[in-house]
Length: 375
Image 1 (cartoon, rainbow, N blue to C red):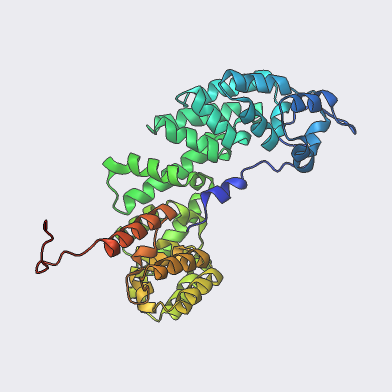
Image 2 (cartoon, rainbow, N blue to C red; image 1 turned 30 degrees about the vertical axis):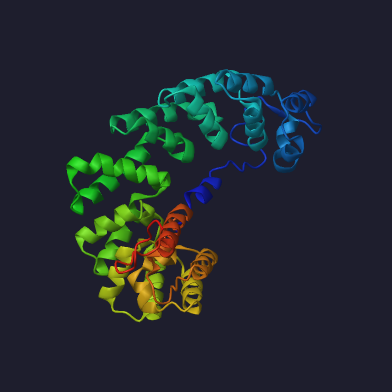
């Protein structure tokens, strides 16, 4: 698959150096642990060893507000185990001033439907909630900006949670990228009446698109146009890649396209058809594609099968081999059958596998066989 957003989110965790952004100027660093902090975390059943191993510097800070953080979360409906998990993952939260935390709660509740949902967001993205008060004005301005675009509140909440940097920076930078996306959409033939829905879907699928320079988008679209993709096809790629086209560059795409064409042995026109069926091919480096092509061919799958169903290249070799073995055990030979059954998520495959099994096990009706009757 395209680079997993979940993997990308790890990059958003604040791996702060000696003085993280959440550390207030008045905080002091001691050579010994703050026992009040340690005792409060113990009382909350927080994994202290995990904190010491990953972010031990937090335990040396003073002042800290461990109990205040716990009370805030508890007041929003968070259970004891949830509070313990949040503080084990993001112990920097205890360094946030109580007034700052309450201000953040009010800010998030302006777009979050209820406190229960906000607790769920904090549990998954604590660094997005427990942030420096110096960013609050930018956060507030960006919320107002995205609301002016008539974006769904849930989309805005998702953006704040998964791509917090886009809300910490000046609103003008987000406006520049949004306008670049809207302009590209319209210039490629997109329907203005559907632009809001298109933009909302794109931002929902790839919140990090806002963090890219608009020039990158322009250069990549020009490169693909030079490769023969029509205006309509470019719009299709921009939408299919969920904005990840902004994370590519002409050099990497050129290498990938050359490798794919040489490996498959196809024309440029045929290669464009393959890309349109599986835009993710543009995204993978040659090393990954080489490994996946080789694995498929070792399984007896022909190149013509791959070109007919190129989306199979989105799956890792381990997943493909596992699914092939399961299908083989049921008598399905991928060397002669369609590769569509291999595609999709684990749930998609299990559904396809179940239907295949059902077809094989359902008894066939023989119209000339005698009917069984009572003796």
